[in-house]
Image (tube, rainbow, N blue to C red; front, top):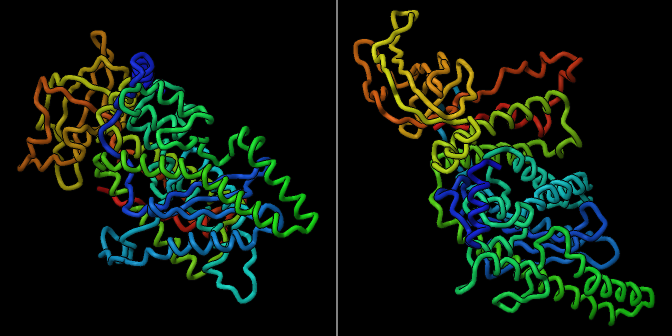
Length: 504
C-alpha cells in the first residue's frame, strides 16, 4: 500500500466516509456478465454445496448439491447451464492482415465471470482442476460435459492471474480500485460491508453501516441477513442451521424415510437460497456502481486481447479438446512467467497514464516522477543508416525520488505516444536532472514535429511507457534443449504463448 492510499484510508477512518481514489474504470464490463456465487462444503477443498449464478438480476439460478450421494446430476446440470452461456457468444468479426499478422476471425463478444470476492477466484481454479479430468459418459456430448466445464473454469481462473485480463474479476477488487474505506483490506473482502461504506443508507455513516453489515444477526434494510459472500460458509451458520439439517437428513436416509428426506431437501434449498440471495443482490448493486465509471481506452484494448484468447481457446477445444495439463512444463512455465511480469508492468503504466490518482501513487514509489523542463535541444540528431535522425533532447529537473535506469523509456499523460528515453541521470540542487531523448513522433530533420517537444518551464509527469515492457525472445519449442524440458508437444498451455496484445 502506498503512502497516498494509506493517507486516504486514515482520512476515511477519521471521517467515517469513503474516499474517492479514481474516476475511471480500468476493466471492461460486458453487457451480459455472469454473476457466479459458489458455496463450499466445510472441510473439503473444492466440493460445491451450492451455487447461485445468472446474467439477469431478476432470475438467479440456484443449484444445490445432494446432501449425500454422488453429485453427478448436480454437476451435469451446472455444466449444461454454464456452457450454454459460454456457447451463446457466437458472432465473429474479420480482422485484416496487419503488421505481419495474417487475417483472422475474432469473436465480437466474450463471456465474463464476476465473483463476490478475491477468495472465490482460487476456489474456481481448484474447482476447475477437480472437474476438468472427469470422464465423459459414453454417448454424451463432450462439449456439454462436466470435464468441459472444468476446462473452461480453468481457462477463466488462469487468466484471472494475467494482469489486466477481464475474463474473471472479483467485485471487491473493482470497488476498492475506485473507493478507499476506513477499514482494513481484509475487511474490504466482505462485499456487504464494503458496499455499506460506499453507499450507506441515508442518515448513517459508512462506518456504522459497515458494522451492521458485518453482524450476521442484524438484518439489512431489506430485512435479510448479510452473510459472508463465500466461498466458505459462515461458521455460525454451519453450526446453528446447516449441520443440524444435514444430520437430520442422514438419519432419515438411514431409516429410508423418503418423505422426510424430501421435506429436508426443500428446507435445504430454501436455507441456501436465503443465504445467497443477499449476496446476489449486493453483486448487482456493486455492478451498477461500477458501470457509472468511464472506461479507459486501454481497457478496451485489453478486452480485444481477451477476445483473441477466447477465440483461440474455443478453436482449440473444437479441434483437439484435451484438458490443460496438471502442471506446466518448464518451457510453458517460463513463457507464462515472463508474459505475466511484462503484462503487469504494461498494465501499471497504462493505468498511470490514464488515472491521475494512480500516477500520484507511482510518484511516491519512484515509478513515476514530475518535474520542470529546464532546457531543450529540438534539433539534436543521431547518426542513421540513411543520414542523421532527428532525436530532440530536453533536461527535466525533479525533486521526486528517481528509480530509473539509463535507457528506460518514459511517457506522460500530455501525449502517451511521445516516448522519452533516459540518457543521463545527474543529482543536482536537492533533486535530479534527467537528460531525456524523444524517440517517437519526432518528424525528420527537414520537417521536424515541434509539438512533440515541450517548452522550457513546462511541467511534465512521466512514468514508464507501456511499450517499454516487451517480451524477451524465447527459443522455439523445437530448439529448446532437453535440459530445459524441450522439445515439447503442443497442448492448451501453449496456445497463448504467441498471442500478443494489440497495441493502441
